[in-house]
Amino acid sequence: MKFPSKKDWWMYPIFLGIFLAVLSPAVLDKDFASLWVGIPVICLLLWVWFTTYYVIEGKTLIIRSAFIHKTISIHDIKSIDRSFNPLSSPALSLDRLKIQYGIHHTALISFKSRGFH
Image (tube, rainbow, N blue to C red; front, side, top):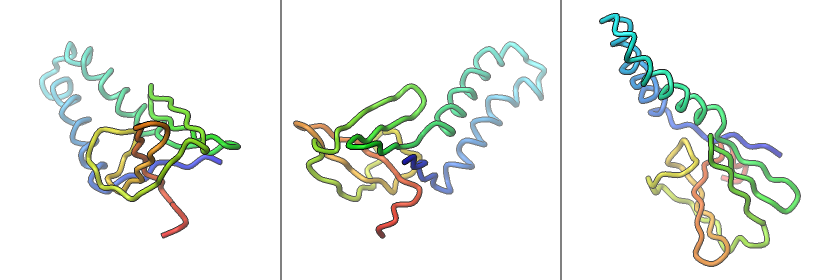
């Protein structure tokens, strides 16, 4: 079963601001050379935005976000706790779940709908 990442409301203006900051020199100043940097940045942000999700398949949790692809065996999970840790992770929200698995491994994810509030 596939679960999309929750997206905090403040992520929308941040992503929009980055798009505008990257594209405005090209549009306003007709500096089309800036698009050589801008287009890859926008593509990376869109890739993260649309490909951050989690899949539970059999006895496996799969975490996807752009170039990140992590597979965790459900049997290796030691604990799941709520977290608001702002560390970089494949999550588009600060309302996260901290999954501890294996020996000293941690993953931070943010399900759009947890179903168990």
